[in-house]
Length: 291
Ligand SMILES: [Zn+2]
Image (cartoon, rainbow, N blue to C red; front, side, top):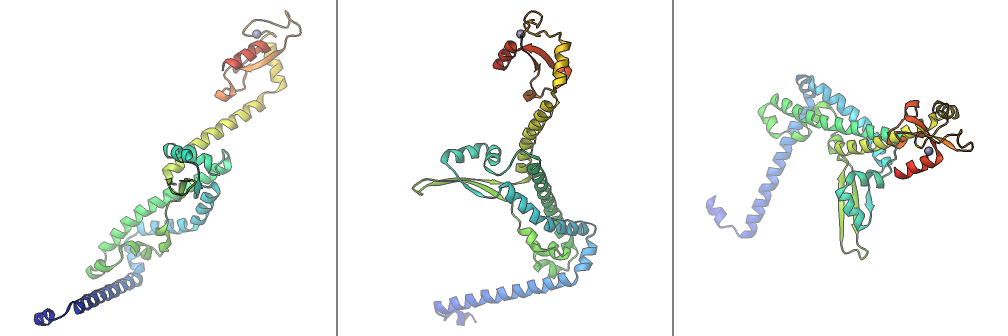
């Protein structure tokens, strides 16, 4: 045998090595197929042995697959999955302040509709991560119950998916990514910032949107509360006298009196008697100029 190997030319060596690789590859494939068949054949048994975790993984997996379409639809509608061609300065700013620039250059609005979609995506994304962790634990649990030969050759990646009877497509999910891409006019140079839409990023977006949405909703409500009757009542309460300069309609019959929010609505002030005062128009202008 050794003599035979020594007498071979270089070409034959390569053929021999190549053939050996092919044989090993075929044998491994056969082992894979055999072990896969074993897992599928004993699926129910392996599933039952790994309960209750297998139950949880199967249910969550089905739900995640069901809701994946909606998740993708919302991400698309929010404009969070795209490559945005921009100037060099936007690209640089986006790198320093990703959340602000994501909101500015996506389709996100400061309204309930956007908030609901963001919430949905956060929930899905978090559940997906939890499921990945559970699936890994489940894989280890199942492997402990496998015969040594099967354990050696079975595919680690697909094992828990096969046992739970969930499409392996779920494992191929990747976080959406928003890319700020700058390419110079000559097209010779370019840079880009990639922002992965993880639950943490979605949460930061959510709190920004929520804060501004709340502020807008607050302003709207407080402005609507300000009625003519209330205005008249405050003036009467203050005896038709300016709370700053003391001028009144008794001293100046044509004096224009206005009702002012002591803490402005924009700073969180409410339209209620304790936050309202009568001012003459001059003092009111002076006050708003100062703010
Ligand atoms: Zn005044």
